[in-house]
Image (cartoon, rainbow, N blue to C red):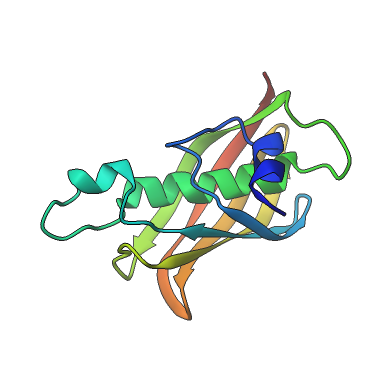
Length: 143
């Protein structure tokens, strides 16, 4: 799915929309998305001027957005009234720096759901190298 499809699911917009493409999604089960890391992203001017590194907190946000896509996705349905919020980080480990020119493969797999919360195992890869892995929670509320 293209950027326009992502914007129909997520309320985020530039510069905070951190998902470029949805590769695969199964509601409340699994999602795989891509984020292309570009040199001209606004945070790189300060993180860090001499060696640009994609901030870990933004990687967590990207993984939360991906999980929100998995949770809110409804084929052929209006999802604009649904917003996923990061509700918790149970664990997160970083294994590789992400720099301009990298393409991040963002994956989220549902571990459990209850009420309006989904707990998901999330991973970020650059190529076949693991960049980050963790467990997060996202809650969904009507806007």
